[in-house]
Image (tube, rainbow, N blue to C red; front, side, top):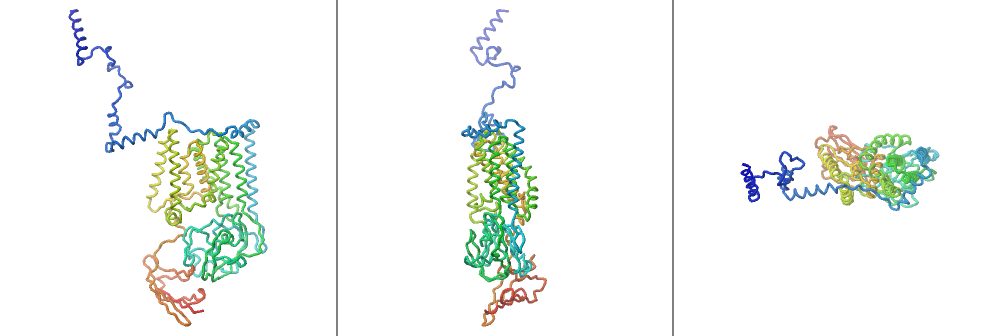
Length: 609
């Protein structure tokens, strides 16, 4: 029996060696384990073709080359393993870290540093307040009193027909005046929508109509001119410092000459206008806008703070607060009548802006970019310098021919399309560079996901009925700031610039809505309403009296009246329910002539002079 078993075992062993199809009975002879000893962690790898089928079982409609390329792109987007965090290593560290060593040597204790910081804040606020107070002072003008603050766009005569029939709502036309005070940089104030000046339309330039024909004549301007712009044109005040003077209404004039004076080219108008103004000569008035003095004060204190500070939170919130106050009270204040009203305005904007500053610091990359940074001079030049450039956007970006980032303005402003195209190309180059930095840090997937949400929100906003998307520059800053959340030299510059743009946008204009109604965007632009259909006029020339009669068809629904402007002054306003049977005599208003309404028409007779 034993031999028989042994013989069988030998036969089976021999058959195993000779016949590979025989069953395997001895696990020791193989590298395979019994099934009950095989764990999930030691399972054999799935073949590649099965992996591909499993991964794309829901995307079988996608062509194989596209799937392969997309998989490679996703693999590339994950970046290196392990990821490499960008860190700025200072150039000439011995020089850049010298202020920090100075503090460590002479003020090593924390409580002493806190006391020094409090004293520094006190000196900063006191110096700023004293210089700001000087800018509010103006000498009292004899017989006129203390000058009143006016904005760069203030006028006697408002646009369109808002002065009423014959301008009665904007009276008096002469025999009146007041002492005024203008801020600096009023030469940059422009009309942002087409404005009719006789037969021409004026846009994107200072609205200054008239002026002196030579240096000896008195400058006379149409009353719808910007008072401050006209004062600069006449040489009464200086554009860089502002100033004060006395303006007088001088009544009707029959011609306004165009001239180029003090950086402003005025507009000519060769007809009659019922109201004009000029500036009184021989006035002694001392008042100036101290924005440049405030600039040197704020620049000095922010640079010193940047050089001697390594705490990212202390640096960011101190700079944010200081530049917000500087913009709102000094470099680009909103329109105001009193300093108390201006301070109230800025404080009301600062509280929500401070919350936004916290979000920017904690969640938009400022803390990541500034933490551990000891390149004090580079931080000051790149981050703080960029922040100052953005804060002074009313000066630094004034040359870009884009006033408002919406389709209507871009289409009508000369050079806006080219400027926008160049800006987009520049942004694309920056974005491509930032993508490589994000990939290196292993954060590209999250970065692309966040901006995918931003793009989706913008596209949805474009589709909302009755609302128009307007991206203000503070919104643009919030959209782009997450793309600077790294510690590289370019990112420091971009981040500082965007924070400055946010500060300027909020301090000057406030939190304007992203979605606005068409009426809000339109402002004082043309309504593009239906125009009356004027029939061919009848002209009769006589030796003593010449007549011109013209008529129009009844206005369609829903219009129930018509308004006629002659030389930019409303001279006739009629309604269909009045029957249009009365006569209207405006001979005196036009200088000569008679206009009578006849049905849906007018008859004008002008005597020859």
